[in-house]
Image 1 (cartoon, helix red, strand yellow):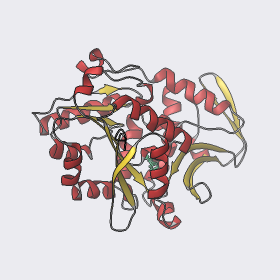
Image 2 (cartoon, rainbow, N blue to C red):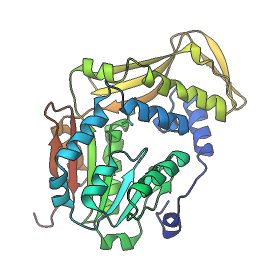
Image 3 (cartoon, helix red, strand yellow):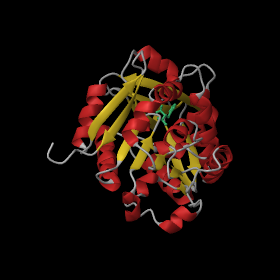
Image 4 (cartoon, helix red, strand yellow):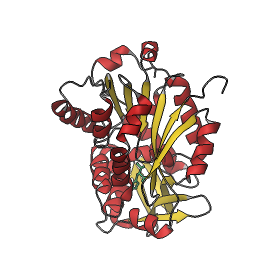
Length: 325
Ligand code: AVI
């Protein structure tokens, strides 16, 4: 989809149902069963993710927020005034508050797949910042292939927070960065939160929190299939599993069937063996250097990297290469 004015005039509510159906039927039909990570984010999934971000073990969100707070003047100095701020996967729009207050952008464009959640976040933001021009997009930002040319009169700043880039395989992350590098043009910038490599115990705890929020988030996929695709998953027959794969530098998340049984989804039958897994998410972690290499391959220049004191998380500020440099 090209991002156009009609889409910017108001909140657009696309119908995510068809995409979800296709993701599920296709993912469960393969030799190794998978469900695309974007399927997590129905209204309930977004609520559960928001709860995860507040869990004591899930250090990512609060660490990124602290980095933004600490380096807000440096960010403002790099970006300047009057930018068009595009937030990909805006969710609750919690982290953006610091950037809105610091940068006072000309326009803020949150993009999120979860329509009702997006609507609620915009209402809250608009009442906190009555001066702010908000033009929201409801949909999958992977479908955006062009931005309106008049945006190029302003600096476009794309904010992609929370290490969501880690949910893509490195090759796809590179393609994603290359596409946004092209779309935002020579004056454009990207601010991107990236989770770093660290002790596996810290990662194990973050993805297996003691309140069971991550397990509920993972299992909500099955509830969502039951709700939206006339499925009959018995969620008690699946266990949440999240484990760090050292070789790939990635936390992999699964739903593991505890018995041999069959399930109906949208009139089709799927059989699970005892111990069979549905792969639901990858969460890649990058050293500063590894991410710097990825960014360069994609055509960006890394202008700044900010970290917390324990190097748990990093925020990279990317721009275009200076011609002739
Ligand atoms: C959205 N994304 C960056 C989260 C992550 O950490 O990979 C999703 C998540 N999955 C389990 N907990 C949080």
